[in-house]
Length: 223
Image 1 (cartoon, rainbow, N blue to C red):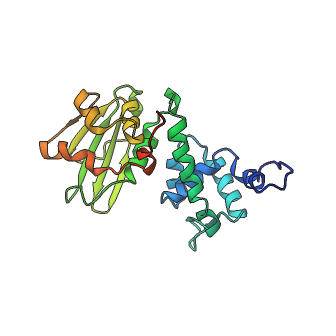
Image 2 (cartoon, rainbow, N blue to C red; image 1 turned 45 degrees about the vertical axis):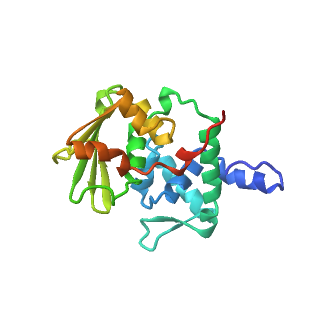
Image 3 (tube, rainbow, N blue to C red; image 1 turned 180 degrees about the horizontal axis):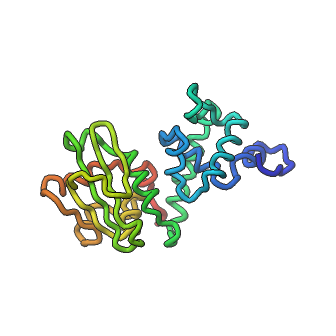
């Protein structure tokens, strides 16, 4: 746990554990379905493996997380699950009241990892579908990402997996992040040309429907 506030207030006691850097983001990842160390790490790509291991151990000792029977999985305990409405409320508050994003907040790796776990597989064609995302405004090494979709499965690659590309989505990273956060509608981005989709017409039209936006994306913004 972090340093004590030396208060009996339950908010203070909770924050002694939860306000340490990265802790709630790790809980967010576990709530989003990540269970193995490398899965959690992909949701916090700028966190060092050493610190992630330390924070997970702290959460286990605090009774927020437990290790699976095979020792390779991390699962929220009932106490951890009770944090779900807390994390969801923070997401809603953050999207409503902290709207400005700096360039340092934009991360294609995190964006694609989040998109990968919110696929509507019923809307995706049968068989393998490969979506190539191109972000011309980012460094070359992070410019292209492949999202490989199969029935009930999805994977993100930062190198060409060697499969035929079904559709290509191109746009500045900021605009794609705005779409994912609910700040910009797919239709508006496509109409304005800020984002383009290339491929067979039936797939071009279907692409936006393959992705289920996070719940916070629908939150009303202050006037």
